[in-house]
Every structure is written in C-alpha cells, then in structure tokens.
Image (spheres, rainbow, N blue to C red):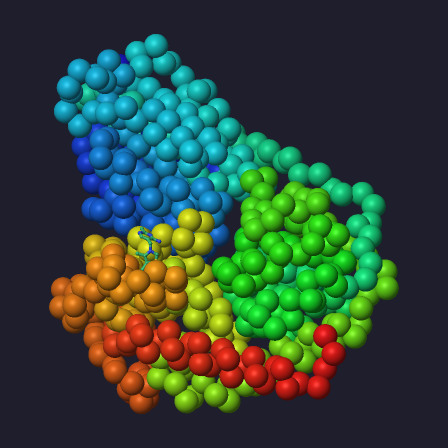
Length: 558
Ligand SMILES: Cc1ncc(C[n+]2csc(CCOP(=O)(O)OP(=O)(O)O)c2C)c(N)n1
C-alpha cells in the first residue's frame, strides 16, 4: 500500500467513524499538518464544517454548538501552539461534561525534541482535562488496514454520552506528503461497524427518607421534567438553579439565592431543622445556597444524584451518591412524614420574595434592574447565554418570570470564550448573550464567526468599565489597591468593535433607553449599556435589604 492510499484510508475512516458515533459538526482551524483531516471532514457528505482561524475561539464555538444541539462536536487544528490554544475550552468541556472530540495534528515522533518547526510534545497535552486519549500514527508504513483507527473511535465513543461523558483527545501523527486522495469518497459509505457501549445499572429498591427536607436541582444534561412531576407529589420544596430547565415548572422555587441568604442572615437557627437534602447535578452558582448546604449539621442526611461518574459534590460531601439514570433513581425516593407546613411556608416566602422584587426593582437603575427588564423583553423561545461574573448572578437573582432556557460556561467559570460559545449555540437556536465588558473584550476575536457563518445573535453588553463583581468582594474595602488590581477599568467603548464585525449597535444609559429595542428581530445586534460599578453594588444591597424586611414581616412560622 502506498503512502497516499494509507493516509487517505486512515483519515477518511477516522472521520467517517466519528460521524457513525454521532459527530455531525466539525470546527476546523486552518493549518498545514492537519491537511488530510480538514479535507476528510470537508468532503464528508453528511458533516457540517465550520472554519475558524482562531483556535481558542474555535474550541469555545464548538462547545456552544454542543450546547445548542446536545450532539458531540469535533475540532481539528494543526500542530504546535494551535493545539495549546484549545486548552481553555477543553478544560471547560471537562468540567461541564461536554463531549468534545479534540483532534490535533502532529508531526511524526522522530521530529520531536530536535528543533523541527512547529513541533512540540503534544502527547497527553490536555491530560488533566480529557476522559480519553490516544495517539495514532496514520502514516506508519506498517499499517495495512483500518482496524486500529476504528477501534479507537469506538473506544472514544464511550465518552461521547453516558455517565462518563466528556472531552476526548486524539493526537494524530502525519508524515508528508500531506495531501490525501480526494476521490476516495467511497470511504464515507463503509458498512456501519459501531457498537453501543452501555454501562448504566438500574437501582433496585426504594430510597426512604422522612421529615423536613429540600430538593435542589442543579443544571443537568438530562431532562428532569418527568422527575419533577413525581417529586412535586412528595411535599418537599423543590429548588432549581436558573440553568436547570425545570425552573419553568410552577412547583419549583427559583429565588433560592435570596431565600438562603435570608436564612443565613436572619434565621440561622433553621439549619438544625433539616432531616435530609436531595441534590441533583451541577453545584449552584449562588454563594449563599452553597454556604447554607455547607453549614448544615452532620445529622442532616445529604443524597446526591449525578448523571455523570465524575461526581460534583461541592460544597459538601454527601452521605450517599447515585450515579447514572437520574430520572429512574429519583423516582425511587419515598418520604415518610413529610413536613407539609414547611412546604407551604417555603412557598409563601418564595412568593413574597418574587412579589417584593417585582414591586421594588423599578426604583433602581442598576444592572439588576436592566436584567429584570431584559428578561421581560427577550422572547420566551430565545435562549439566554449569561457570561460569568455578574450576568449569571443577576439572572439568578432578578429572574422572577423563569420562562427562558438559561445557559452559561459553568464548568470552570472562565470569562474567556463566552462570546464564541454563545455564537456556537446561536447556530442552533435564537440566543441573547448578556456579558460584561471584560469578558466581551476577552473574546472579541470570536465575533468573526458570526460574520463568516452569518449567525444572528443579540449581545447585551454591560459596560461598567471593569470587573463589577469585585466590588462585591472584601478587597473593595482596600482603595489603595482595588481599582488597579481588581476594578481594572479599560475606558473603552465598543462601538468600533460592532462596526468591525458588522453588528448593529446601540448605546443605552438608562432603562428608558430599552423602550426602542426589539430583541425579537433576527440580526446581529450589540446593545452597550453603560452602568456604574459602585451604584450597582449599593442598589443590589439596598433591594436585598428591602426584600429581607418584607420577608421578616410575613406572618409565617418557618
Ligand atoms: C479567563 C479568566 N480570567 C480571569 C477570570 C477572573 N475574573 C472573574 S470575573 C472577572 C471580571 C469580569 O468582568 P466583566 O466581564 O466586565 O463582568 P462584571 O464583573 O462587570 O459583571 C475576572 C477578571 C476568569 N474567571 N476567567
């Protein structure tokens, strides 16, 4: 077999096997060493390819494609720093359980460590961040069939769904000449060889609990609607994170950040009263909610349910964890002697928080108020992607409608790649992104793909001239170091970025300015909202105190 035939058979089979295992979108960043991989992906009749010249943004864009489609996505790049630029998104994918297939082209091993151009040690280069790694040499002269590459993709596919879902890395050594045979399209119609790998086990018997408890539903990839239908018959308050889609259910409490903050500030005695806690999925964003969970005494039994094997038990180790098949496990829960009174009063407190917030928020002009108004304006069928920092927290606190699907990169909470991820999602569904000025600056390069792929998106950009979240942290009380180290003002307006990437643009200074906005119109829009970090902190605190006052005056016994 000659070099070109071998190269073509190996690489085309690899790409076709990935397609068989559910990958139907591939984001390619241009390069030479990756030539046969890129050509194979491009020629495959069933695959959709995207070209993104910036590897860092490309990988985040792929992450967003997954978030919009829930199907595994592959990324392909050349050797060297190109591969290193994937690292932020691969680490996010690891901790968000995103099935990202990372394919890095490499030079043959004999060119390592001798100063060959664009060559570095790429073996296990994301070792802490992938669930599977394999190195293939697709031009090894001893390779005469495709059994190895097919077996590798079959193995890797175990991590593209199920309880070990997460990123996988294939480092592919390729020797020159790099051009494959572009006529071998027959390799894309091989007979299907893939076999499913099923590892889940059903739980036998009931999970018996009794007394006063709470159910906390963090974000999950699995749809929990059927579980909520069952759980809501148990007379235990159900609390959902804003990224958990069942937050739309009326039986579900969503004001948990203010609720737990109230308990910690005014009713710490309640901590002793809980018999059990049921937690599902990702940890919550809210600091108060996590402190509450951590402060519960050892006598409170904590159960944790995870669809994935890498259990995310933060903020405190549960007494028992249940892995995989979350919906069927949750249906095994039975509660003896449920505390009906506590169920009713928790709902009354939640209603009081919602009503007070709805009534008083209009007295403010901060990012919380803007977020509140925007949540009322954004069409219900639009997904909202929130950047880390204040947007994710403000949506958590100020969303009293709970009608949207909310997304964020909460694997490792970076402020990098947020725009690219949102744009990836926007390929599959309508998206409004809410983002701060630093996070927006961080991924301005990422805007390019919206132009290349004609992707519509609304971007709400809160420009508070720096990192607004730091005003909420203790270092704010150290004025000698605060502004330079944490506030980090950039003194920038983003009008020219909008112009550069061909977005419509408007600049707003107060809530009246929102009146003329139409967020339902398809297009590419950046709305820059000018806010003030100090006023933002004061307004958040003032509204919170007023809500606590209203709850204190309620005639209920918690
Ligand atoms: C890649 C990365 N770098 C730094 C941080 C630390 N960090 C967290 S929030 C933040 C400030 C974000 O500012 P901005 O995006 O303007 O949002 P705001 O805080 O004003 O809501 C920084 C620097 C991070 N999370 N990720």
